Length: 218
Image 1 (cartoon, rainbow, N blue to C red):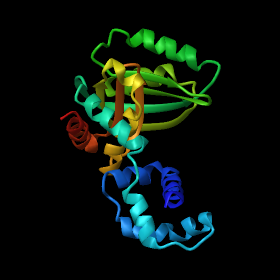
Image 2 (cartoon, rainbow, N blue to C red):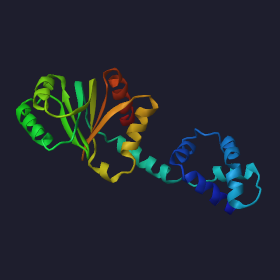
Image 3 (cartoon, rainbow, N blue to C red):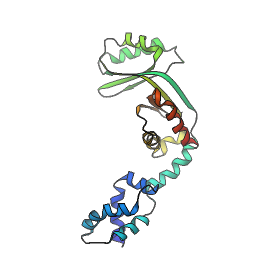
Image 4 (cartoon, rainbow, N blue to C red):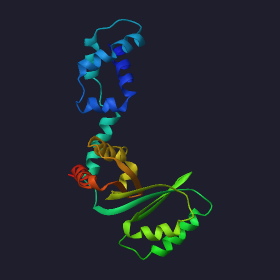
């Protein structure tokens, strides 16, 4: 029986989503056993009963998902303030020799706009600027010589103040994004600093996004 248990556990642990679904009791164990039957028999080199696979699944020790799940629940109870900003645009430019100079000049110009939302993310081939609608005309002026790859508007942002131990807890971003994905919410951008994370979504999804993330805190 130990050989069956080890084989079943190894197969399930190859898919963290499957292990998570089992832990959350979202999987029909009998159906899973039927699905795994051929693979388990091939790995063991002999025919075994599906009931033995069912028993092995039910007797599985709590895995990595179960361990991080306990820590995550305590962590989310400590989430700090939530801040919502609406009326945001997302601009993506191709990286160039002059892009950072354009960025520096733009930031210098709008540094007094303390009530506006602004963020800059630099990638290997492209960079994204996220800014409030009221900065649009100024941004277009400063970046007129740069190659615009994409522009999204009618966006809103939810920023969460994270506890300081967020860098020591596994799965923080996974659980936040999973909650939104299950609700069919498309996350346009994720912006993070050490103790903050911001999710950029369409205006139409902001209420649902805020409620979903607040549910984790409750």
